Amino acid sequence: MIIILMGVSGSGKTTVGQTLAQKLGGKFFDGDDFHPIANVEKMKSGIPLNDVDRQPWLEAIHQHMIQIQKDGVTAVIACSALKQGYRQILIKEPMQSARIVYLEGSYELILKRLEERASHFFKASMLQTQFDTLEEPSSQEAIIVSIDQELDQLTETIMSHLKAADQG
View 1 (cartoon, helix red, strand yellow):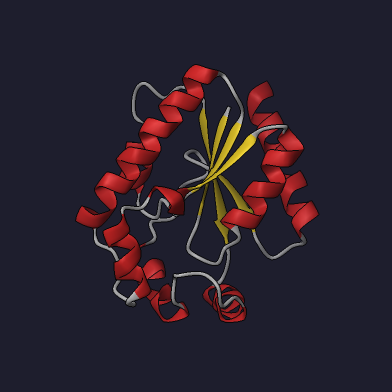
View 2 (cartoon, rainbow, N blue to C red):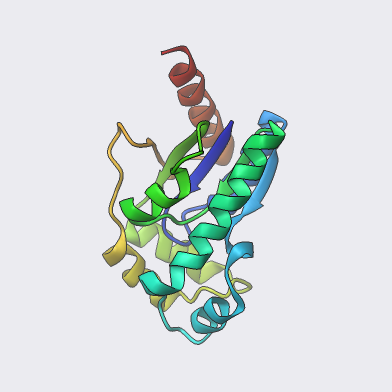
């Protein structure tokens, strides 16, 4: 099983993803690690990425997901996947076992979190552009989980939704 944790920067994708992967006995991958250097430099400069910038990044993650699927391991991938088109690239054929989990949170909560972390290349001032770009998934496309809860509660909620989806 491959789980894509999506949401805007600051929604907790890395923290939740690492914890979830550990609880599931799987591997964690940060989508940021698949960005070309030019994308990272743009973001460090406070310049938002556009769809052209994101295309090679999404394709690289998709190719990695194909390999994970071939290896038959459980993996959690943190990836903003803000638009439906981006998510379609990630889960296109030959993907068969990917689940999308949307970490939903308010602008105010996420801005506060971003302002508290200084080490990430994403600048808090770019958050509005992510919310402007965000095309929230439907409950048919993704498991939607509010980030306004403790980490253990959040991961347990995700795991119960995944279990219910597997049984349904």
